[in-house]
Length: 493
Image (cartoon, rainbow, N blue to C red):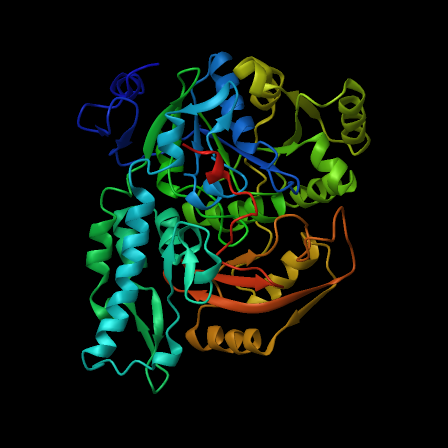
């Protein structure tokens, strides 16, 4: 493999524009300036099985294939969380010949970004507790404190008071900040609670935002590694798409768009989660527009949930008017008949489909997909699903109806009170970040396929004035997952 310093220099980076972490990973320090004609390609998927359907493998393979076609291309992916690494899904560095190296480093501590985010979050929580203990000059009402500590491990026993790091507001801020100045601004604006006379208290009122930014001063720079075919890949930020917005950092995406003509990125879980948030939260915040969308489908997932689940995601993606196709990620157990039936189903719904086999064939396994994308990119017609000026309940309804095919939204009393609080704070223009099960387009994991005309339940709402999002928690979704009966850590030595 290439030494990481040579890879950076080959990209056109000067020696003072990156810093090496050993010989196989580095951080890029350049302030990004996007190329005017660079193209952004989003990889999303149908609703997955618990083991995932290979979006990362497809993303890496597609990037390798684009490089084989002779174009300048770079992939930008999220960092793995230790939760799924030790849990059920495992790491997030691709698979087979479409993998990243050093995979073990990336899957575990990497360059320490998750540790820095966890530390910044928990420093804020400690500052709140300490302020109250030391006399409570701000007159904070302890019953209103709305920040939780976090840890990057699945732990059921911590659910009452902890989020997993990937679901923390600091992680969201880390990924949505457009530069270091914006990072500091957003950290300062984190809502921590209210005074006894119901005035909001922010992190800046505790004078802790400077120290939080200091903890993140190195982490905020994107990490660069490489694929097995020696092509550059940025790996930075790691929010979950079922309980957060599920996309890598804006800074990393813009850095890639400044260094390459084509950028391949992914958004977590199915299009009803990661892609919806990428298209309605990340793109507007970053001021970027996608040029193509790849919808990953597998035979095993459609056997699990029914072919109509693919149709649900096809109809969802049509809303954004961005060109897209289906990528059938081939598994060794798939028969030719199953693959042909899936291709025919796509054809019957007027959608192009391509079989990808990058797991076994590397970049060569995705060349047909790459060639089609090169001929069909177009960002000129992209549009959001909803307008900022709408109320929070109107935005929730649009997502529930247009993406989830629901015909009713039921709010708990707690959620209704949060809607009033949002109005009082004057932040109804914030985008919506839905938190729900990833295994169905609905809020019920048992509603497989393409359920229609049903109710979704809004259990609670979390206000994030730092990330500038409204987190809407549906049904029984939780922000601190648990480990499975047979965790992956049992296999590790």
